[in-house]
Length: 331
Image (cartoon, rainbow, N blue to C red):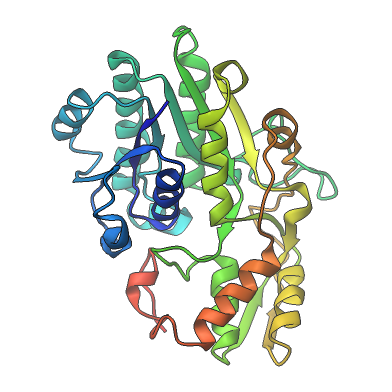
């Protein structure tokens, strides 16, 4: 399985994934509408195994031609309106992109005989834990509390249940933890990156609701998870779902701040109590480790250290620039 299509490949997750796939000698096509620019593709532009085609997933006619003129072995589907705030701001576009066009792409993949389809889902699907002392896993109830997660759950249900009649098809859903770390298309609107950036710049950081839980996973390990599924036997991953991360990498905001203070001891923090958060969950990610031998290579402290260094050494001159945010940003 060598010829891979990555949708949304110019984005935060996709741009790193492209490089990892090329390093593993896959033949890679990236399709992206460049909503956030294409600078992340420049250093791989001349790689003989890389092709870029500008196309919006909502342009079904153009996308259909791309699919029919290439014989892809697998699709890694990242193209989406990403995150709760962006989906709230662009709800109609989110519905079109994250549900209608994603369903169209899945159906078309079956129609033309693509073997593997890997879907980037989210642990936000779990919503709020019934028992704050417990962990959720792949068998737990899904309780999405945002349009972003609702559309992920809706598509997962269609892909993993309604499509099971196609025995030779191999779709997999990866429910990713909250992402952080350095990427060719950098973002500073993600919790670890944002907190570290603000404190490295000497700002006072205001924390709302420090006691609520989230799982975290480095963006590099997202790429590792996709490649793990690509390599896996179909019988292990077909119509299957995996949480991606490590069970030990669940943190409250207070715990994140404690990690950041190890790296930035003079950090200025202000806490504002918040007694309710609709997303509060600790995630068990043992399944992907046990069944696919997946292991993370980076931990939260590693992400904090690399972001802090990049900020303090001026690698990114203006981290408040809008290009590093998926929603309107004020510095």
